[in-house]
Length: 251
Length: 215
View 1 (tube, chains in turn yellow, red):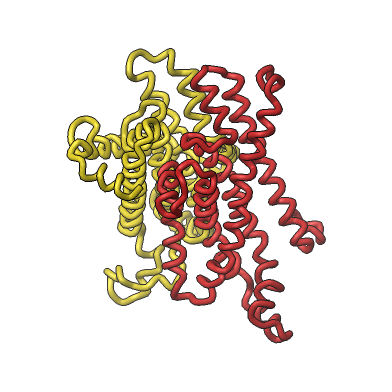
View 2: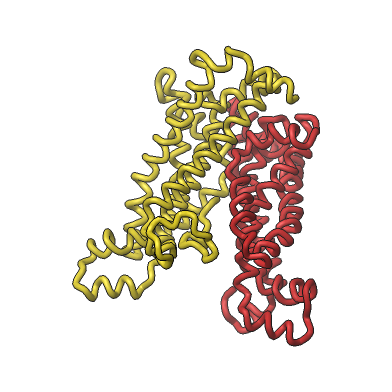
C-alpha cells in the first residue's frame, strides 16, 4: 500500500492540470470558505438575536436535532429532490453546497447562542448600569464575551464542511474528495489513500489556523493571559482552563 | 412506507450491522478514554497535550480515516475492522475531554472525605470519582453516539455494509422509499442509543432522581 501511495505522489500527473492537487485543494478550500461564510451570515445574527432576547430558543434545539440525520442521506436526498430542477452542471454542485451550508448552520448557531447565554449576568447588569442601551450591550459586551464559543462553533462547522465536501465528491463535487472517490471506484489504492492523507492534513491545518485566529481576536481579558506581566504572553502555559473550555459544541 | 414493508428483513439486518459498527466502538472508546482522561487530570501538565491531540483526531474527515486505517493497521481495505477502529478513534477523541472534565468537576472536599475514609488510588477512582462524573460522561457519550451513527453510514462508500447501503442504493436507482427508509432508520437508531444512554446514566446515579429533582 505504501509504495503505491508514494508512486501516486511522485507521478507528475498528480500535480498538474484541472485534476491536479493544487486545483483540487483550491476547490476544496473555496467550497469550505464559501459555505462557512454563508452559514455564518445566517447563523450568527440568528444566534445573537436568540441569545440577546431569549426568544425562540427552540430554534437552537431544532438545529441541534438535525445532527441525528446522517450527512450522507441528507446529501443524497437533497440532490435527488432538488437536482432535476437545476440546469446544467449546477445540478450537481448546487445541492451539495446547499447541504454543506445546512450542516454548517447548527454548530455556529449553537456556539453563538451558548456564548451569549454564558455571559456573566453581572457584566450585563454593569453595562446597563453605566447607561448602555440594548444594542450597545449586545455589540460591546455580549458579543466580545461570546467570541470564544462563537469561534469554536465556526471551527466545528468548518471541519464538518471539510469532511462532508469530501463525501460530496461522490455526487460529482470537485475538491480533494475526488481522489478518494475516484481512487476507490477504480481500486487505485495509491490515489485514494494519497487523497485521504491530503484531506486529513488540510483539516488539521485549518484547525490550527482557526485556533491561532481565535487567540488573536479574543479579548485578552477572557483568556486569563493578562494576569501575567507581559502583553504578549503567547508562550504562557495554559494551566488555567481557557475561556472556551466549558462547552464543546462539536457535533 | 411500502418499500419498508416489502424489504423490512433486510433493513433489520442492516440496522443490526449499523448498531454493531457504531455501538462496539462506543463501549471500547469509553473504556479507553477513562485512563486517558484520568491521566490528564492526575498529571495536570499532561492535560493540554492529551486534550489537544485527541481533539485533532476528531478533525480527520471520516472517509479519509476509513481509507487510511489499513495503512496503520495493516488490514485489508474492505475489512470491517477498519471501520470499528476508526469509530473507536472518534469516540475516544470526543470522550477523553469529557471524562477529564467530569473527573475534575468532582468537588475537592468529596475527594478528601473519600481519602480520609481510607479510599485510595483505584478504589477512589472507581468508587467515588467515576460515579460522580457519570452525568458529564453520559452527556459526552450521547454526543458520540449520535455522531457515530451518522458517520458509520459513510462506510458504505468503502464497501462495508450497513444502513448506508440503503442510502447509496436508493440514490443510484432513484428509489425514494429506500433512501427515506435509510435516513429514518439511522435517526431512529441514533435516538434509541441516546435513550439507552440516558436510561443507563439514570440507573447509575439513583441519587439524581431520588430527591424528586429532574435529572
